[in-house]
Amino acid sequence: MKYFKLPDLGEGLPEAEILEWHVNVGDQVAEDQLLVSVETAKAVIEVPSPQSGVIAHLFGEEGDSIHTGEPLVEFLTDDDDDSGTVVGQLATAAETSGEDHFIIGASPSTRAHRQQQATTPAIRALAKRLNIDLSTVQGTGKSGNITTADLEQTARINTRFGAPERIKGVRKQMAVNMTLAKADIVPVSLFEDANITHWPNNTDITMRLIQGIAMACKEVPILNSWFDGQNITLRQHDHIDLGVAVDTEKGLFVPVLRNIGQRENADLRDGLDRLRADVAQRTIPPAELQGATITLSNFGTMAGRYATPIVVPPQVAIIGAGVIRQAPVVSGDKLAIGRILPISLTFDHRVATGGEAARFLATFIRALEDS
Picture 1 (cartoon, helix red, strand yellow):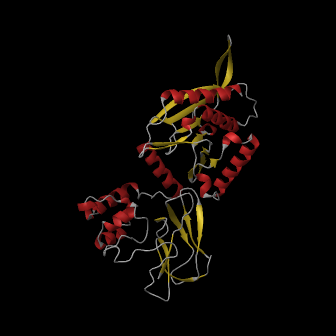
Picture 2 (spheres, rainbow, N blue to C red):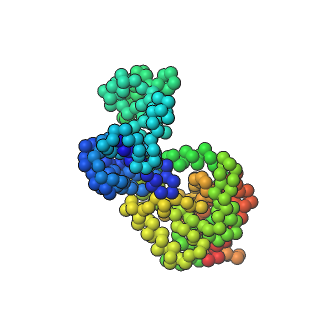
Picture 3 (spheres, rainbow, N blue to C red):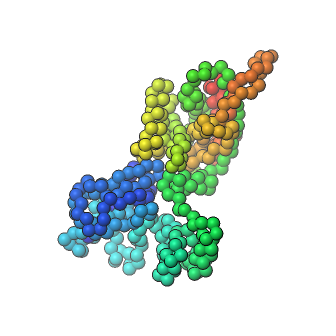
């Protein structure tokens, strides 16, 4: 047998979720024929066959997660002793000392696999009869095993409130990223208003925000950094790759606009429009969703004045722009009605001091008000 492992899908993405198999066991497939559609953290990717052959086994079902480097498809071969793989090498029984460290189906890191290991055939049969997804059950038995009582309790809750739906795809990754951010970041938020009364009505607000971020990063570069909290190392960037949060029905996407400090506005606008179109069509390459050095969330296009945006490691800062509002403003010794753009800045206080964050915000506000 030969095994085709899930290949590297770009930018070190660790896993993908199986969306749809396009082949079945026993099918004769040709090289480059579409095998499966998978979803990474942000994109849908079609995985072709690396060879011609007959499918002997499919590892995983739709909805399962699988890590890069784990077997995806098994091909029949003439040599049953062939333990080679198309990508990498599977450990032999001798190498694993008789222990099965590889589990067919989903990623070993998922709860579904942990629960599969912590159940008996009788428990799995009862879960099937009660229509319970074992990945949604927390075992209370010895070593975390799922018990009959656990299933009965889950069945009662499901009957009363409905069965829970397992989060998949983009929303799953968003949940994972937010959990990591909460665990890893020491966040502090600052808030300020920018007086943009002088801006023409046809102003491209997003481009103005991008210009302001570029200026602030040059003035206070430590907020345009990556921080490794485990090794306590800091990587300061001489370029600014801006993540721009894009809200969709599928969840939050953050495409990256590269090198914003060295590009003309027209080029930046064209690039941003292309990224947003690719997000909407789910055709954006994974590489275009990786490597942001700082992030902008322009939530004010919908609602909200101030916020405490979440910094996603290894980044150090994120800027939020709220809804533009009319408000009294003082100009010289006169009071008038002007337009105010509320700004929020969250930064990782392990890296930046309050003074550095305040200077960054002041520079950003000045860039908006002076332009």
